Length: 340
Image (cartoon, rainbow, N blue to C red; front, side, top):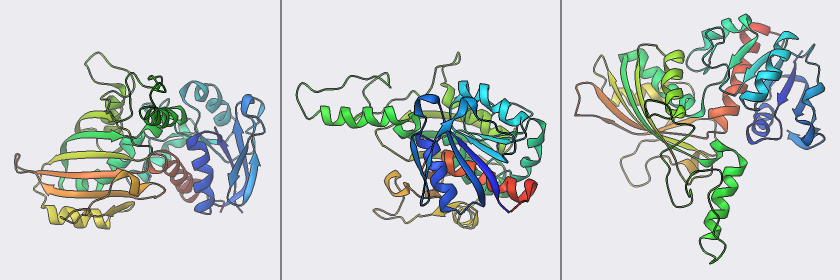
């Protein structure tokens, strides 16, 4: 016996990826429905070898459905997630709306699976920000061994994190730069993204940090350990898919780079590719379509007593969003619902 699953926002980048991953991982589905706004009604979406036509989210009754994977942004989630939850359908939400709610667990299954037990307070589980998700997968085994005191992270985030319009903007600006008179002015971003980097993701806050940077701080504390100090600089780069991060950690106990490498190799969800030679590391283009979080460039930081540096790359549409949501659904099935 399988589950009745709804994918909400099925026509977007993340929603389509959710459907792909549910099929790829052979999630035990008895019935699946693709939901979207009325303007997308009837749009076709692929689920394995099946084609689904989207149904109207506004009129959909979630009664009798086991779980709903939401990928529709905070404003729409605020309207529809409580309705689904009240109908007895467990919501797995990809927006930021519930991440900081103390009554809603924020989960990365490789890191804090036991938090799933808290879902029943609101019948909602939150999926973390894409940049946080891949980082905490890497932090967890190192924290368990040596206790991380402080994290300094700089991100190099692809445009797919801003949606399809951002991907189109990068593509059209790149083409336009080669054709006189066809230059494309910034629309999604405040400055040109083609052949450029923009140290600004989400809105600016009073202390000078951006909301994206604040998310990494708050979410790491909630998922891993509230005592960890985190400082982040988040940068948008002209890459279509795949987020990269340069991470520096300071630990309470000394952790040798070789031991760190082995800990990461053995940790769930991680692939270590770390050869000290040209090409002996992973770049964003190589992680596209992959489930793993890739770690490279592991090395001691000699400027502090107990420091390590490493490079972290992952497909943000997968581990940063859709894959993590499906993994939460799998965890929910194993630990709580137990129908399959």
